[in-house]
Length: 428
Ligand SMILES: [Zn+2]
Image 1 (cartoon, rainbow, N blue to C red):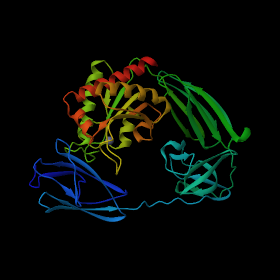
Image 2: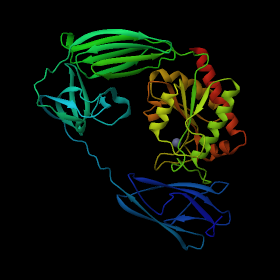
Image 3: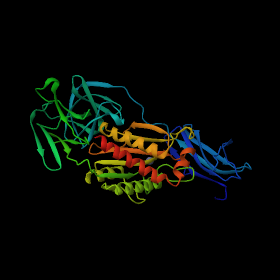
């Protein structure tokens, strides 16, 4: 305990700028002391911890922290930056040809950077017909009833004289020990979309001459674990399905955050990155004892980018990907009402794993079951593996603190998640 008789774990800096209309003060107060922030007495838990949210006005907001004797001990200046983007109106224009100027251009169903609206990923030099602009996205003509959207800076207008549509050139299947690849050949790169539904993969390729609505359709039946990878390259849409032995799938454990990135901060200055790593190690031990092949995206306190985590899992041919996190509270919310565990998935085929792990984990930990949710997190978005992200508990909720501070916590996390994985594999 420092001389001030209290510790502020968050904000970590006394001058901070953020895009938000609220901020938390989180920390602990000595039992002989009390803390006021801008004249408001801060309520503490039995163990001295506190978490209090304050509204922010646009621009600078000053917070004075005072002690029992009403002396000002600390001053925080938090700058609220007003959201920079405002949405604009749709401007339509006659169809114009353009070409993607970079790889991996995300074709979206709506003109916004919203996670769930991805249709497909376009390579560089894909010809597109565009006919509108909104919110820095251009509208792509796919067929009479369907438009897509790509960022306006990801395309160059083309003035060359090209055929706006492509042609279908044939298809085939390549098969070997580890995968089966369906190939659909076209005269050039074309916009496409892929959709998973009820264990089938529906792909559509647009702007194809001679097809109804200039749309080419295909349906592929998938087998467990229903993963796939799809790409368009040199006019070929290839869809690769891995052949996996589901009695012993390779499991990748991903301890969230690490190194320079602490993640959320608990009342007692617990860092999410440390708790995630301990949970990951416990889970690895448990799964190894059951003879699973297990790999970790990090096994020490180091920074690993989201991209590197994903690439690692793909390179190692991971089949199941478990990302471990602990939850923080939305800005300007009450820490006492936010508690429990929740599990996220992105791809529909990962939903049953999410369900199964969520059920077994909450049973093992005794946390409130907040259910499963679909969200677009980078580490669980790839279609190459069955991925989930688990928020085991809330870091600053008093009830959850009791749970994650208890000595069996890591064992219970490991037991719950591995049980969930086993139940998932049984029902496939
Ligand atoms: Zn996290």
